[in-house]
Every structure is written in structure tokens, then in C-alpha cells.
Length: 472
Image (cartoon, rainbow, N blue to C red; front, side, top):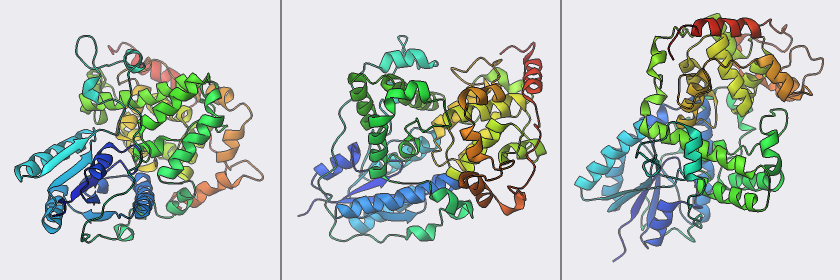
């Protein structure tokens, strides 16, 4: 008699290479039914992450087809969907890769306990992180609240070599019916911006591996020096692939270690950035409130602005603050779905400090606009720059966006690339912004570039005044 099939429930693990759970399923000799469930968490995704997921699912379906397998798509509450599939396929096991955000943990625990009560082999596997959050502890047995000691604790840890792709995935005798990805309309919320942003998306495992290879061969050497320059292509741009699990952090880690052994100067700093992602998930797992409220409770009484109808906040979202670095970065995000990391810091600082606006406003906007949106990194990033989070920059540090632009865009390439107003012949990148934004914004490349809504010095003074005599 053939082995009963294993249903493999896919989420943010859209790859075949170094996929521990899928590797074990293939090795078991059972047939494997890869399933992606569109549930409430998928439906809650912002517009850009939803578009990116659609592209990722398309790419992963092709990977499976190359192995003689296929991707089954279903919609609904996961437990109901999985139970129906178990009934129709005769499967006796449901496996998946672990997630670490609080909503996913609650969902997965409910599914696991219910399926086990049904007599199903419900099993979760690692794969989204280098280190399971509960395995990284301080000397006192607690979790890390500061990045640097966590880096020192894990930098020499043994990380297992990446697993190969399964040579094949055995198909079931009868495939269950699948929904059509196009019918899901995952790109609809992007409206006309979908066409613009899609030109910057190269989804899937093969694209991720190619990007990693190109970075390690030509960019990692100068990474530490050049990573803060938004005007040059100096970073790995792997975050969107990590977000959907199209490449494993373990594969990236070992590539970084090899570069370090080869004496490439920027390799260790690159590894540190990978561990910063681990730190974000470490905190999200141990202190899930970081995603929804001030990590430092003393900030709860701070008089943040949060009226998203305010014209100043609208100007920030539209890249019309009059601060060139801020506006260029916001437009880069609207056109490409990405934003350079240095630019994210400047954009965040300007919103939370110059404009004294709640970090949640920025967190929600990034959640809607970034194709590399990640729940842990987004939460930690915003709370870090606002000063309300763990390992925060000193709350009284206020980035000067004008001086930052002079330092990190010395040849004016970045600003010209993204801001059309004032240029006699703006590049396509800058003009694309006006093709991506809602028509209702009423913006044109022929508009006069605005004066600052808050100047660099005025904003700094207002922020320091607001912080004065507060016990943070």
C-alpha cells in the first residue's frame, strides 16, 4: 500500500533549497501535497506585500512544476481547509515551517493542537531564522534587549550547512482541486501602481540566489563603507526574498562566512545585519507588544500626533515635505516597493521627531507600501528610530535630513533619480512616481517643489523641547 500523503502547508517559505520541513517530507517516501492557504492573515496584508506575494507564489508554483509537483491553493480558515484536504486526500500528516509573529503563533498552535486531537501528525520545522528565539539566552537565562551582546553571543555559533533541494517530490495518486491564483486578486489593492512596481520585482528562489551571488562577488567587499549610500547600488537587496522565504538565512550566512574567510572586508558587517534581523524576531517572539505599542512604557504619555488626515502627515506620505532626502526616499518606495536603509532612518526620524508624529503612522504606511515588509523588522525599525524601542538610538538624537543628504548623496544622484520637480529633463525613475500614485493626489512633475513643512533646525528644536523634563 502507498504511504499516506503529507500535506505541506506553505507560508513564508517559498523555496525548495534549504527547506528543512519540505526536505524531510520528500525524504520520507510519502507523496507530498504542497498547499498555500489564503487566510485572514494573508487578507490583512498591505497592498505592496500582497502584490509581492502574488509574484512569489507564481514563481514557487513554477519551481514545483519543474519537480513534477504542483502548488494547491485554497482559501479559508486554515484548520477548516486542512481538515477538508485531509478528508479528500487521506493524508495523515500536516507539516509546516514555523512563524514567530504573535498572530501566526496563535493560529499555528490552534491548528496543531486540533489536528493532533484528530490523530494527525501535525509538525512544525525551523527554517525562517538562523536561531530559534528560545535558544538564544543571556547568562541569566533571559532574552536579549540589546543587539551588541546578542551578536557576540551568536557570531561564533555553529550554523548547519544548507540542505539541498529534494531531488523529486512524489505526487499523490489524485491531486486535490486548487483555486486559481489570478482569481485571488492579490494585486488589486495596488491599483495602477501595480504595473510600475512590478517592473522592479524579480521573484523566486532563482532570482534570490542570483542576487546573493552577484552581491558576494562584487559588492560585499565595500559593503561596510558603501552601505549607507543610497546613490549607489551597494547593498544585497535580499530583504524581500527573506521576507517570503525565497532564500534561507542559513544560505546567506554561509555565503557571508565564505566571503569573510576570503578576506572580503565588508563580510562581517553584512553578517551583523543578518543578525539584526534575528534580533528583531528575537524581540517580537519574547515581547510581541513591540508590534502594537511602545516597547518602553514611559513613552505612552508622550503627546504624539496621529491624525492621518492632517495635511502634514499627508505631505509626508506623498513625498511632499520639502525635505529632499525624505521626499526622494518616499518616492523611491512608491515606485519600487523598496527603500534604502539609510533613507528609512531619515524618513522615520523626520516623521517621529521633526513632525512629532506617532511611529505607528509610519509603521502602517510601510506595511502597505513595502514589498519587503516584514513584521519584526518593521516594528523594531520604527521603534528604534522613534526612541521608544529596545536598543534605541538615544531619544534625543535627531537626524538632520539636509546634512545627511550632503553626506550620503554627495553627487546629487539619489535626489535627481527620484524627484522630478525642478529638473528640465527628469529621468524615468522620477517620472514613474506620477504614474504610480493615486490620481486623486493631483500631483504633476510640473508642480513647484514645496518649501519644508518643518525645517531641519525648527524640527530639532521642537523635538528637544518636547523631550525636556521627561523621564524616558
